Length: 393
Ligand code: ADP
Ligand code: MG
Image (tube, rainbow, N blue to C red; front, side):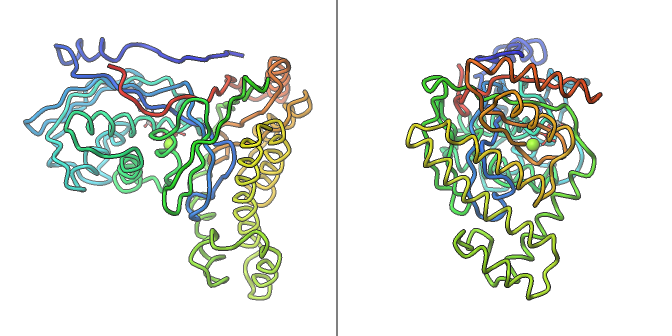
């Protein structure tokens, strides 16, 4: 296991100077995240409970006044991408650079006077692992431009800009959780986010004080059916709400779930819609259960709720995969308190809650089980609840 409290990586300011000359006006950081519980709830106006990782995207940035936007990432091959801010158009390609360029586009669309920038990026957030490397990139860009152009936007407002960049400019239909986590999380806390109105609360999550460790297991697999499946789940949830005559599944209290499932069956709803409704309403409740446990200083008690969440994602929403199921089962078999896949599924990562004293043994057991099944070796690290986006210098 690579236990990592701090994840820094190369200095983007050095890259900035090499690429553009001179010193950047500043350096900013924004983290990736894991979601503790509340999956596929954020497009149903529901609850999520993510925490920021020690892994961050960092940006060294200077503003420009001539309409030129120059972008570079040390983590991908290829040189500087040079664009004009007044020619940015949604879904016009640009590969990875669409994420930061989309932020510039979304800011300008919202009427903010962003007149260009030189941006050098570097990131320690594993990409495509369900840990929100894309939101980290968007958030660090949005925060840097907010500071440099004195836009006065709040964390949630920056998250909305980042989401719009990803939805409309890049063309990925994600919810608001990832950007909100990257922008608004704080050290030692999980973020209780109500995705209906973006109200949030920092929930104390001091794992070390309770003798606990949260592991993130990156399976390093990404199954291709993920994209279509996300859209299908989303449509199924909307269909469920429509048949129940409510605006979104958030409006169905857990107490009424049983009756609602009967109503759906009577209305001839597809069997999959019934499963999706059960998952979403159940996961909203699980978020509330975990929060009550954390508030009571009983993080240990969250273990079985995480297990239940995984079963629901596997059997009702059906977004897990053999590698994730294996990681979760191996972790539990080695004494973990609870484990679940996190993020969109079909690969990506799992979170594992373990006694700190037993965490290494759990990590070893997961690695061994995954190797034994012939899958690629996972990346496993400790997910210390870390700070959200901030200016470094
Ligand atoms: P996730 O957000 O879960 O890591 P996504 O598929 O949403 O996965 O985003 C991954 C994409 O974000 C990458 O394919 C790349 O285009 C972009 N990206 C993330 N980090 C970087 C980086 N450090 N440099 C360049 N592009 C990045
Ligand atoms: Mg992403």
